Amino acid sequence: MTTKVSLDKSKIKFVLLEGVHENALDALKAAGYTNIDYHKKALDGEDLINAIKDAHFIGIRSRTFLTEEVLAQAPKLIAIGCFCIGTNQVNLDAAKRRGIPVFNAPFSNTRSVAELVLGEIIVLMRQIAKANAEVHRGLWNKSATGSNEVRGKNLGIIGYGHIGSQLSVLAEAVGMRVYFYDIENKLPLGNAQQVASLDELLAMSDAISLHVPENASTKNLLNATNLSKVKKDAVVINAARGTVVDIDALVEVLASGHLRGAALDVFPEEPASINDPFESPLCQFDNVILTPHIGGSTSEAQANIGSEVAHKFIKYSDNGSTLSAVNFPEVSLPEHKGAKRLLHIHTNKPGILNKINQVFVDANVNIAAQYLQTDPTIGYVVIDVESENTDEALRLLKQIDGTIKARVLY
Ligand SMILES: NC(=O)c1ccc[n+]([C@@H]2O[C@H](COP(=O)([O-])OP(=O)(O)OC[C@H]3O[C@@H](n4cnc5c(N)ncnc54)[C@H](O)[C@@H]3O)[C@@H](O)[C@H]2O)c1
Ligand SMILES: O=C(O)CC[C@@H](O)C(=O)O
Image 1 (cartoon, rainbow, N blue to C red):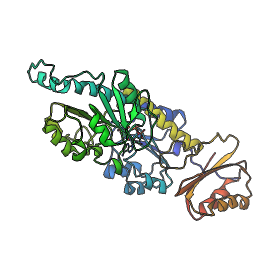
Image 2 (image 1 turned 180 degrees about the vertical axis):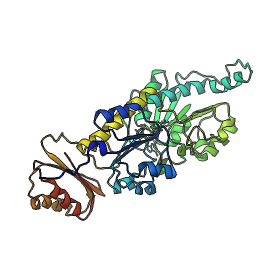
Image 3 (image 1 turned 90 degrees about the vertical axis):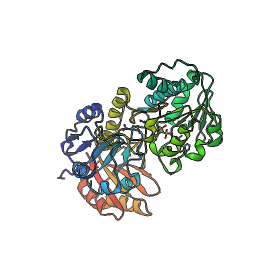
Image 4 (image 1 turned 45 degrees about the vertical axis):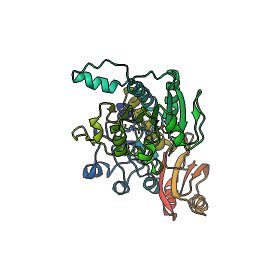
């Protein structure tokens, strides 16, 4: 007779922060997970550590920073879900070293961002931000100077991934000519054209929109040097990450009157909550649209993200699937009805698979199916067995040198 070693669903603790959409709660509850600690706001410092110290799953958006130090305080953590696209707020390597896959929602808010950016391009090309501010102050400056249609104008997209390419399609629909710069060769949609260099894109574009991730290669991508290459009267939009634009350099080029305007949804430092003030030298400009990181904040996007990431949690918890994890070997698994499933996450080193297989010989357990995926640093092996006797196999698996995590699913 074996003792049950996988946790009851009611004991698996989910901590959801930053007011992720209630679809996530509904999906988890429908799957039998009831131990859910739900917070409307982001947490940090001691509050964050207290909330996650016994959590098995953590769900966050962009304002919770899961650093190596924070992860070290969450020893039971099985998986992290970013209920958004960006995953820069999580130390992905540290999570991987602890055997923790990180999931996100790679395209549920793509359309929302692309729509916002298209709207901002039109608004800026017509100088509406400035006109709006002036009329609010009682100034009736009825003029066509510096106001243009977007039809026939060049849109330069930096980063032609999910959002950049979606924007490309929308912009062509209103008659813009689309060019893009990406470090990878990308399939151009519609009549869009990839250009060979950032310099070329900056010099030719009437509107420039950034859609790159936060990483070392994109830090201050639009710095003083690059901003000086931008066409006179162009508009610049950043709804990617705050680190991508050098704010002081942007302020300087705006103050010089070189740009027609700008729109920023993301900033190098963003207030942690509604109670903290937003301060930026950009606030002085009427021709700059400033929004509080709401590019992906539509009801449609948030609802889709809530269920998408919750279902990734459920799949990993119920079935072991790591499909679409951003930091982890991806294993897509069939259901394991009638079999027990052992999961083993280990340091990727020679000979470890032999040792894993030897365990099943020693425990006298027959392997029904086996799935393996590795990356240069870790391996993830999933073993389905028909035997009841998984306790001994799990005990021996945990003893293998290089084991990061091992568990059994029923
Ligand atoms: N404002 C918001 O609310 C909001 C919402 C969603 C996403 N975002 C941000 O938008 C970013 C882009 O999202 P996505 O879904 O399009 O990502 P994606 O991964 O699909 O596309 C990113 C593209 O950038 C390219 N790239 C990477 N480094 C580059 C560089 N140095 N120069 C040029 N191109 C480079 C990649 O090759 C890729 O094609 C996300 O990383 C996220 O930070 C913001
Ligand atoms: O919802 C958020 O906090 C972040 C939205 C966006 O920046 C993303 O990365 O998807």
